[in-house]
Length: 231
Image (cartoon, rainbow, N blue to C red; front, side, top):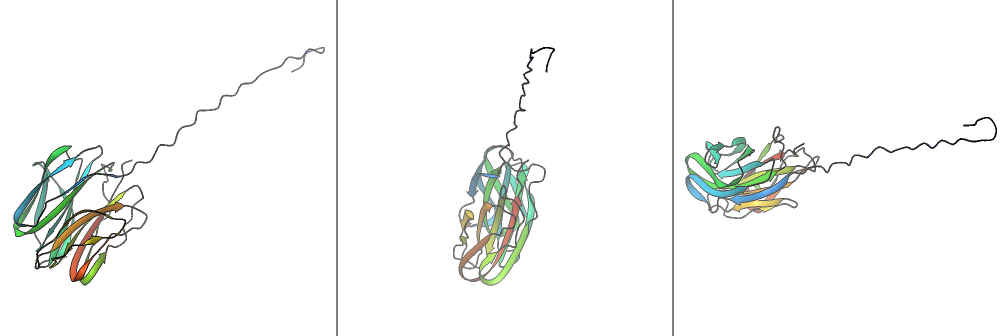
């Protein structure tokens, strides 16, 4: 700006940049604890101890029997778990998967009860950072016969989520092996005429599967479900 004459008046303008907002770190479904019912139980119920902790919690329980049964699962005596899916070939192997959103934190008992005596195996995993409104995606079940392996159909999820599964193998006095990158939660070998059972988890993805293998041609059933991450 100029005045009359040669005098010059200067103007200094100060510009303050707006503070940048840091990008929040995305949440990821995390494993809190795993447990299992131990050796095969022949009866109508099995009880074992598990510990649940963390925030935005969910508890998943996989169950295996020989015949198709009516199965109920409770946590800490009063919280009933919801059935996700049950599938199998009755008389050979049957698998069940249950879950509970926001289970009471602490150490308590998981109790699996069936309507008639059978060979029971079971295991559990508790997770944190789970969406408390829409906790799971679409579960998928698959049954094969006379095979040495099984692979689930492709599950839709994200890299921030987890996939949880349970497998039942007919007439199986042999163990089962989870495919990499699955992390095996539990595995219980059945008698020569009783099914074996196991469960695992793995990170999710746009289109992922879970898979298991064993020795000798046998029938098997696999149930898997994506676990959704909290917002």
